[in-house]
Length: 77
Image 1 (cartoon, rainbow, N blue to C red):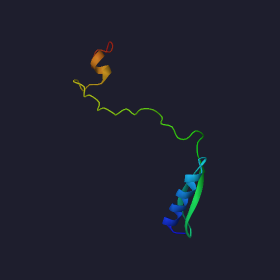
Image 2 (image 1 turned 180 degrees about the horizontal axis):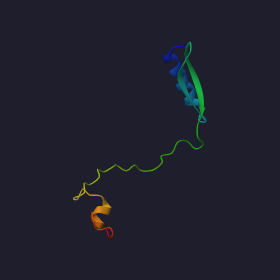
Image 3 (image 1 turned 45 degrees about the vertical axis):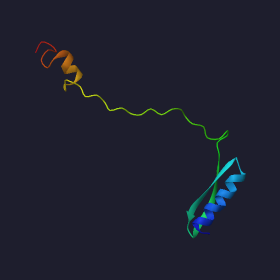
Image 4 (image 1 turned 180 degrees about the vertical axis):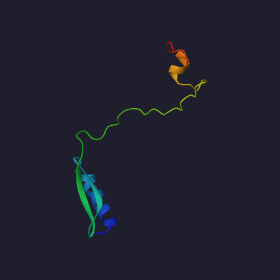
């Protein structure tokens, strides 16, 4: 079976079956159609997506501990 034939056959099978999805995949000697169980109730969106924002650059490049305590202010050295 060629790739186009396998994809056409998979589409025809998927149109009539709501409980399974059919896909074409390459086999050792050509292409074949495979069946995969569909989730009950269909595929639902998981929610809204949030775009990532760039992290703001700090005015002071020192680490947090160095900013709060100071380089030499952490004890009686």
